[in-house]
Length: 96
Image 1 (spheres, one colour):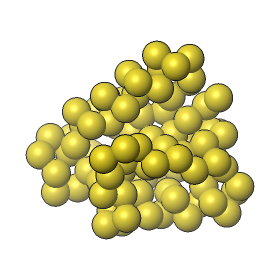
Image 2 (cartoon, helix red, strand yellow):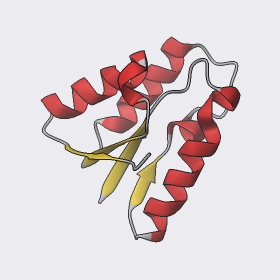
Image 3 (cartoon, one colour):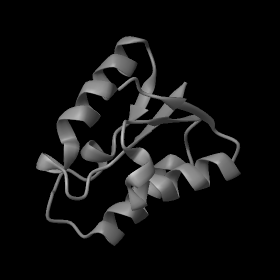
């Protein structure tokens, strides 16, 4: 299964990259193909809009969205969740 990880980045220390990388490692260990926005956009100086354009292009190729804790207060993750649900992607929540 191809899984997209979504969660809070803006305003988080290190843009929350450690949480994204940890979830990616767990899901890859289970045999999944994982799209990690921290890998798609590793340059932390890239604008939010530019990152979202790249991320959404990857999201629409996936079967599932995996939401990290705090996703519901993230403008980007809420947008990604909306797109994913409208496209009938499966949705899973990462344990807190």
